[in-house]
Amino acid sequence: MKVLVTSPYNETGLDQLKQWFEEVDYRSWKEHGRGYQPQELADILSKKSYTVFITEHDVVDRIAIDACPSLQVIGVCRGTPSNVDVEYAQTKGIEIINTPGRNAQAVAEMFIANVITFYRKTIAARQWMIDGKWKEGAHTSYLEFKGNELAGKKVGMIGFGAVGQHIARMLKVFPCAIQYYDPYYTDDDSDYHSVSLEAVFETSDIVAVNLPVNESTKGMIGREQLSLMKPDALFVNMSRAVVVQREALIDTLEKRSIRGAVLDVFDHEPPDEVDLELIRRPDVLATPHIAGATHEVEDHHVRIMNESLEEWIKRRK
Image (cartoon, rainbow, N blue to C red; front, side):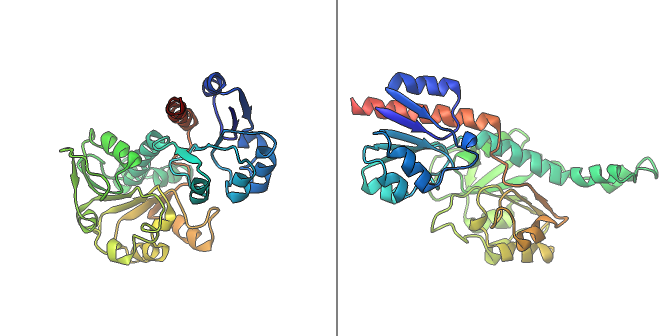
């Protein structure tokens, strides 16, 4: 069996693959300078009878898939296999393996870091110092940048998958009260409370969006939901921008109906002028889709992928 790997993969992970496969062809998209496009993948895949293809940011559509009839598995080093034409691959009998939770720790840490940064007015305080404004009374900064603690806040999760649960476990020790809306999460855990979608918006101090993108979640959050939030509530989206109606969020912020927003994702990346309108607002803390961007995330996806591939190999015997 042969495997093509275009996802970043550490040496330990590649060594494991070499134990299981007769040939490992490693062509990381990082060395390529960008994710491979379908025809580029097709040119590579057509040259050998690969059994497994491990990808991360490449565009894997039917052009690429048809180029390698021997493919049995496409491994996607992402939380969701959004860069792959999954339906078409499945019609070819190809199994799709992805790496849910690979970035859960990274996103959870940045969630907490950015919420605290927002609450404590850290960026504005730093700029105040850079601008040389620390010239007045000794207590000026103490009064001007007095913020809030994360401890004691009620956090409402919309979507309670791997990332949401990881954030919840970390928030619990502050302590924060955790409630969530997720019809697919059915575990009975007394530390977290299942509530309606409306209740999340109505009663949370922080509303945190942790949703995947599918037909049921696109545009799921709009004016109706945002209008339920408390005036001092904070809206946080580190999942996907498309699940929130952008104009509704802008309108909510312009009316000062909520305290502000922490955003890591935008309708257009790089942002268009409307996105920039959001990004430039003083009541928005914005980052450029980097919540899951840590060096350790690559180690996590290698471990999760190889564990799944090992199970797949055992099933074939």
